[in-house]
Length: 235
Image (cartoon, rainbow, N blue to C red):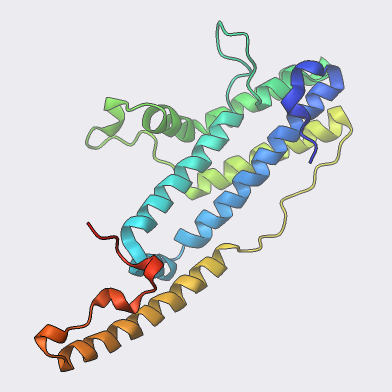
C-alpha cells in the first residue's frame, strides 16, 4: 500500500494535499470499522451477557478501551494543523484544507470544519479532560463533561466523511467511495464465546458430578477440565 503521507515533506501542492486526504480517509475507514465492532459487541444486552459470562472484567476493559480509542481517533483528525510554537504538522482535516492547491474555498471548508468541531464538542471534552488529562472538574459528582453517545460518534464520522468526500471530488478531482458494507466481524467472536461458554458449563457439570462421587483425597482438580495452556498459573 502506498503511504505518501510518510514523506510529506518531499511533496508539494496537489500531491501534498492528496497525501493528507489519503491519510484522513484511511483513518476514517479504520474508525468506522472500530465503531461497527463496538456497536456490534455492546449494542445488544444479550451479547453483553455472553461476554460477561466469559469474563466481565475483560469485557469492561475491552469496552472502555475501544470506546476511547474511537473518540481519540476522531479528535486527532479534528485537531489544528500544527501545535503552537512547534515546527511540526499534524495530519488532520485542517492541514488538508491549508494545503489545497486552489485556496478559493479554504475559508468555506475551514468554517465547515469549525462546525464539525463544535458538533463534536463532547468528544473533544472527553479526549481533553478524561483521556489525555485528568480534569478534576470533569470527574466531580454530577458533572457531565465528556459524556459521549454512540450516536454522536456515528454522526461525527458520517459528517467528516462527507466533508472529506466533497474536498476530494471538488478540489483534488478524486472520487471517494462511501462506507464499505458492514461484515459484522464481531459475530465470529461472539459465536465462539457463546459456544465456549456452553462447553465450559458442560465441563463444570461433569467435574461437579465427579467431585461428588470422589473420596476427599481423590477430589479432581477443577483446572483439569482445561488444556494446560489455559490453566491458572501457579504462584
